[in-house]
Length: 341
Image 1 (cartoon, rainbow, N blue to C red):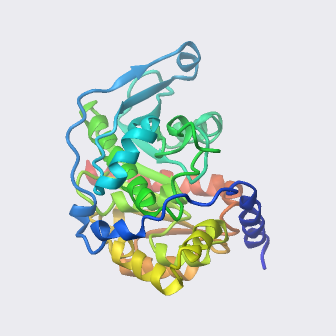
Image 2: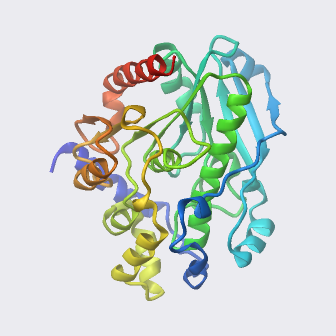
Image 3: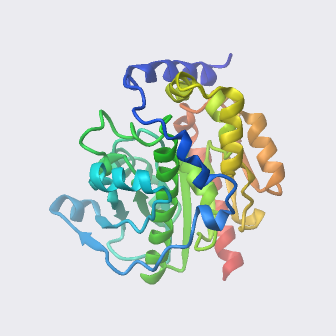
């Protein structure tokens, strides 16, 4: 076992210190509303975003960073969950993003970044990763907060992201649907601000959201998913970090075969891109302990073999390859821009 895969295994074990509470709601009986839908039914188009709150504090001005908030346009499919969503998750109904403009004015290109599962906020990326990317990629960056994370974490949640991906499958699927909805709203709003090119990148769970956006209308001009895939039926069974979801579903009598059928019928693994192969750059890790490289290769073939960069190491060691990743992203974004001009 390489060091990358070993560290991923250790991180998966440590996650048991976080996920101390089992899921409360068994919503498997409500899943019929989500199964066997066409992509445009599971992810309907969103209305144009006309009301955006833009806030610039003293610290934000010095960092050239602006806070964006808006009422999420997400529409719940399950009436039973809708009542819970409106009653218990009020903070999650407000979408939240951080807009980084290092020149103090809008550039021609912007990159939306979608963070990974359990991340608490954007300050780490703003002071490290985004400083590098805005300088070397020549883009503004908007960091989108996932549902149930960061500023959107409900008060009853023990930590950021606790409620996003659990055995409460209706809430989990609605979290994914809401993330896609909020990202599409943001894409449209940024285009209305005058950006000539809007791309999306994301890591892990954020990378899966990024891939999904590349399969839908109202999507970005290009995508850069990082250490991710859409083969969720396999990830749920194999990834150590998802042990709590598996344990709770088993407790409710949902065995491995049933779980695979559920996620296959949800259909994320069957999505196919609307973007061309030249408008995608995948960054994947050869020793990833959560994202099986063989499954990545299978989806890569199914999607027409888009641009791909394989880095050494695993899921948790990707920062060691940041320079390599940034160089490849810069060449890729420049190539997309030259084709669009």
